[in-house]
Image 1 (cartoon, rainbow, N blue to C red):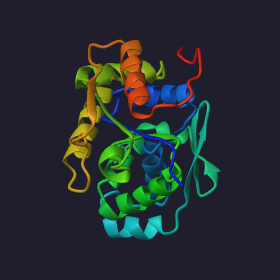
Image 2: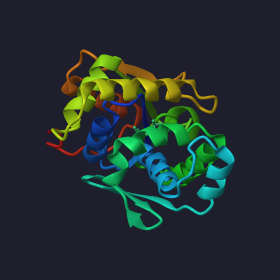
Image 3: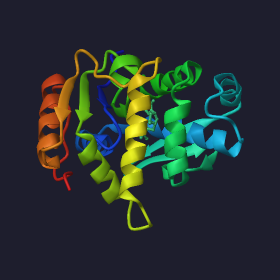
Image 4: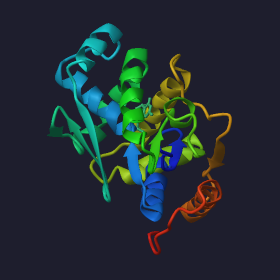
Length: 232
Ligand code: DC
């Protein structure tokens, strides 16, 4: 049986992956799977278990006692950690930094990649992350590497963070730290797949980014039905 289409959206934090993936999923009738939320859920488990983010062996043991589930839906993904809904909590800054740190360990990555491959096996998905086009689904039908300058990405994160005392300098520093770790880790670092299309959204309005990616999807996945009026 042939599988449905797989669309991989990779790129650094704040590049706009989630917005793009959500739009594509609703426009083309696909499931949106946000893999970063899975690393975040595991980082939360490490926090709750008082586990050191740098101890790969202990984290591997912890992973064996952990269940992470993604529930894709129209409003985004709900994330369950050992059956408990942690969708909101995993957006906090301690979890954000923790996710970037637990995700350097090869055993944690292997576990997550296996779960992600199972979730996307039948296709019909837009999967966003850091290594989807390189490792999780190297045979994805469409591979986009979405990028933007650190300044613009920090600014977007700041605007998303709401009025609750967010400090733009701290946001910018944390984003750069995360970039550094995500791009330089030994195990499947953040990098564009050789056959991906890189889109730099630094000076591009969202509408133009969406139009370009929709065209790519139409070209690579002919016959996909399209919804009308899904663009906000
Ligand atoms: O996309 P995000 O910001 O929610 O991801 C949180 C962290 O998880 C990110 O800093 C690196 C890691 N991650 C990863 O290593 N591989 C993925 N496919 C997705 C996220």
